[in-house]
Length: 124
Image 1 (tube, rainbow, N blue to C red):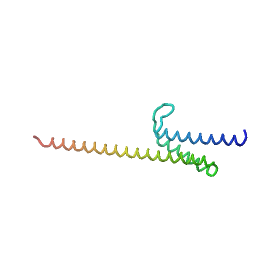
Image 2 (image 1 turned 180 degrees about the vertical axis):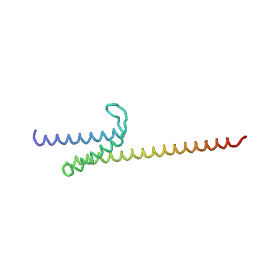
Image 3 (image 1 turned 135 degrees about the vertical axis):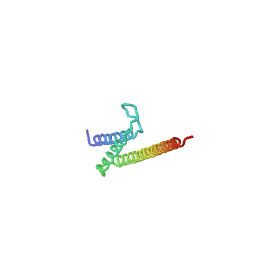
Image 4 (image 1 turned 180 degrees about the horizontal axis):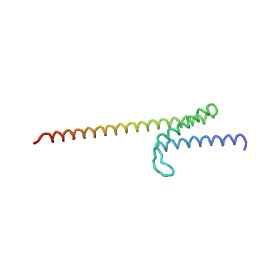
């Protein structure tokens, strides 16, 4: 294989590697189903790891990539990070809603206990 052929092969392998981590991150964010189970499986820390791997790849290959490779990697990282932040916001909102619901349930229970106690101490 000549240098041009080897360069094309390496470029294709680089794109494939980036896409592999991109798909893994999306899968772990719950954006796409697991290709094996067909189910949405959300593992946000695994998504973070895939994004971190691409960040590391970018840092380690700085000044060694063709412009096209740099643009593609930057685009993928930007897209993943925006989606990741969106998922963290969803988690935060869900936790706040659950906390609010729990607080309401506690208040309702406390109110009921107080009302029950009041009824038991005041004979009719």
